[in-house]
Image 1 (cartoon, helix red, strand yellow):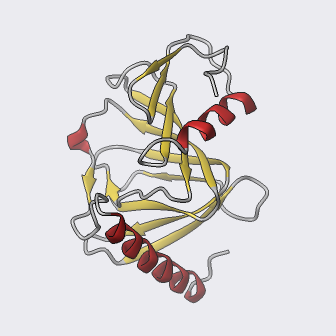
Image 2 (cartoon, helix red, strand yellow; image 1 turned 180 degrees about the horizontal axis):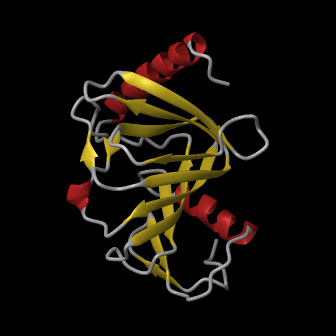
Length: 186
């Protein structure tokens, strides 16, 4: 699919686009564009950045993950992060320093009976576990973006070996399911 006519995009990579317009509207056509693109990149994840630069103080992004997306558990010290689910289902998994699950937030679009919004302002490792074909959410995080501001969990697989990722994801699904069945979460 070609890029939507109403978006002036700067292509950072096959997974990152910056909107270069001062007025932006996002609708079905733009989401279809993202869904078409997400299936053709290695990470199976794509982001449409509403901020104009990695140096902006606030970063707003529409992020789309496919069910095959692996998000390595990570944390952002000294940054506030929020997710607002637009489409799909995920479990936001929160871990302590040792990799033990301390919370699971069942998330989905508004009206599903799941949480549709969350915000962190404390430092925990976290990762969304996608449970639907696609997960579309609006993320807001403090900028500027510096790779060193993201700390990846040392106990999680890096993500380069598909077999390791598949095994880690399988074990994570089992642990999350056990956690949800033993807790009072919806």
